[in-house]
Length: 359
Ligand code: F6P
Image (cartoon, rainbow, N blue to C red; front, side):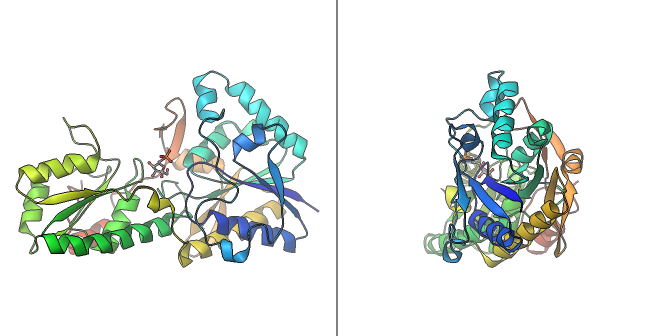
């Protein structure tokens, strides 16, 4: 009988409870024992280690759709990778984590995380030396290379779409444009997908150069006096500071375009998990358990077309666009961004959506 543990790290998103539920059910069918680590690495550093045994009803089927993580994702105030790096305590931190995992005598750890967690796991891989480490990608940002989707992304797109659908009604009543700022850090995929879903008249993302005068001309040319301008939080405007939506809004106002800003914020990480994310979470859980069965380690699950496969973390790190992490500048994380040949960019042009200049 194998003894495995699951933990969720980084920012939460919808779909985490589905993946937890599915891992526990699949492990039970295989005759394995599953533990849940509470609060990610905080729980591993706690004395005693913050861990619970997971039974199929620990996260019941009716709660598996709920956003957030039943296992929690950690307190920002605890010693974590970010603080350990900043304070020069990374070796000590790694040892604490490795000792905790050794104490638990686990055969495998399922790490449900984002590109930061995976990069840190790969760069500090000695922590997981004695067990099988299988990572499952989750993030609303969809900034993880080598997978066709990440858990939580589809629900975030759905949340933004519903939000904008509502905003459009008040926009029409008052002849106003709404500049809606999405999350996504320095990756524009969330804004691009939600913008297409909503039929936004402009989508501004960090990956594509845009010109404010062109944007203004475009909005003035639209056969309507209301609509959505989707702005990714990662865009910048030379000579301006503050929230990106505010910067764009000020420019529109100066050009005589009546507008308001809107910040959907953390509802992008909430909301009942949509079917696509539930299916993805289920596929990824099965893929992770199969990988453990096959004694694979240092791998992540990835969606390729309709199939879920494993790819080595070394490949994830080598393929990603490796840059200083916005949260932990001392660490280089592997990122994925909108590619210039992304078919959605072509689709946006057919919607008459302003997206800037593609090179
Ligand atoms: O990475 C997920 C994400 O929601 C980003 O889109 C966003 O910039 C960030 O996390 C917000 O982080 P925090 O929860 O620390 O405010």
